Image 1 (cartoon, rainbow, N blue to C red):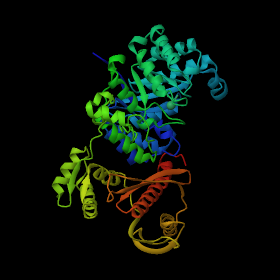
Image 2: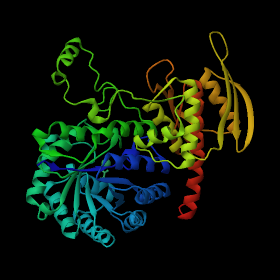
Image 3: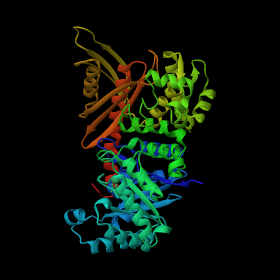
Length: 515
Ligand code: KIV
Ligand code: ZN
């Protein structure tokens, strides 16, 4: 029987540390619910002390997401651990994850602590966390650049203090697979209590080795692996969840290990995280890239036609990549619509279903056939919608060769309809400039991307934009069969999010006395 490896997903914590990948509270809850459908074992929902928004997201996820253990990160400080507990105490299965560096480089230059002081603090903080909750994890940060015998001393001491999981982070992505495997083997065999503790690993991808290091650690006996969807995370990212899960599933013969991951949910989870964070997945990315299952060589295609196993080591269906399924058309009714949503795993309130159904009917007028991906776009648009201060009422654009692109935009702003005309370098620029004038907003456009949701010339275009204002970064999405309309929707979605986020920041800040 294969050993079951625990999947600790840190998309909402380390993943969110990717530059520009910030998510609002509703979006984090939505991702956490999808992670629960994927059947990860643990969700690191955030770092409670770091911001009121993180605190609230962890609290909501703890109360609303069923299945996985819900965890908050905390530095090895009393105030951090207290705040982590406040955030997760409503969760049925709470965990506190506390950390302190063990490398001399970090201790000397960053923490200004001796090895003895760090060891004592780690033990005290694990005790403190155990005062709140049984499930405590400790991470010796920068473990792979630490003196191995000191590292083992710390690991032994925190186990003795009550840590049930000890996570070994390769914080700066410095380790090599052979070396990292050796460290894990040494900890497992030489540390007292190692046999009754889960040894976890957390690898960064600075040298492109995060997944290789994680798999080497599993081979050496690690029982938990920390990873993120699409490998997003600080700098070059973290180990990618989908690569580890599929690596173990496909090579069970070698690793004799597996996970509880429902791999058929991988593709959907990847799309959701990419859409919400605005971080596009590179086409050649293993498992979830657009080309991961595309065979173009004639020799390969010939082999595949004769027998799939000639060139295919995984089936696209195993990650949920099925041929776009035609789900509905113009004549489909509300009841069939609700049934399709349930099949896709969404549970919406009556009010949300009504709003999504109206959108569906409008789309069905523009597009003959609607695919699963079209419904997903409608639903994620509905689920991530925030209070709409600005909504699109009308749009007319003129552009072409030797013509100044001009937009006439009609918006409802706080209940009042305002119409304005503006010009720009191109049609999208003209629309964006005009919207900025009407809404009197000063955000900076960081990125703009457009892609087709399904095939065909009547496909919906999906636009994703990233905006920044006053230190807040948001991603906005919009879909429509007209890409200029989709662009306007994405921009307004981002502006509405920015307004909510800035307002929430000041409200939560006042509540907890941080600003
Ligand atoms: O990379 C790292 O060391 C971390 C720790 C907080 C676990 O993210
Ligand atoms: Zn990390």
